[in-house]
Image (cartoon, rainbow, N blue to C red; front, side):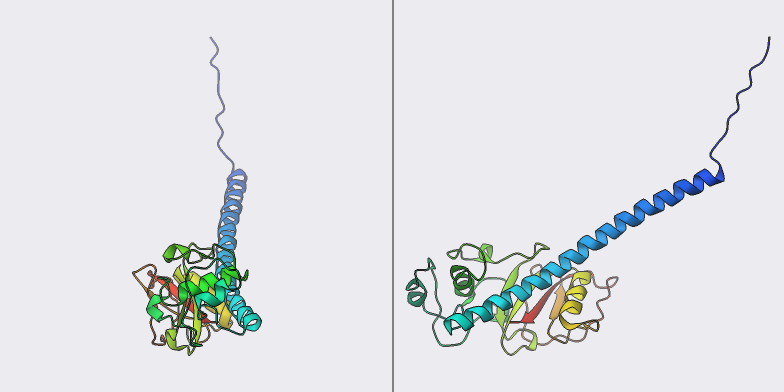
Length: 219
């Protein structure tokens, strides 16, 4: 009776090398895709803050008044379906701690910008739910005297250290270090309450700074 021999052969070194190259390319593509998505998110938050600034300045240019400071009667007199107004003292009254609470004249601020068509949304909305959201699902708020800024500023909450650094770089350039027109702090709370004091220069170390950030820029 003849015995039958079976030849068992494994992968050659060339085949293994080809497989490893393919795996490397796939992983590289996934990582590159994730990086592109994250960069897109960072750019969207910076654009959100710029958009609030543009809406604010356009409102001032058109109505010669500060959005949020005008009396309710003034706004409803334009046919707007707004529900709150300011005190018409030519000063926007929103403390740093009120940035993400939609308190003070901030409710009137958002209602005025929405009713005038400079931003989208329900002009009658009130409370925290009425605050706009960023592309990273954080809140957008407005306050006065935040982080050493003399006037009003727009702020974004719930940012990672990488996102905060990216926003700083977009707003202030390649040397962004938290002391220019983009300023913020990090902490365990989310949304983190802004403060009046200017922050110290920051290196944005993603390894050692794990808490979320808020970032603000002048209007």
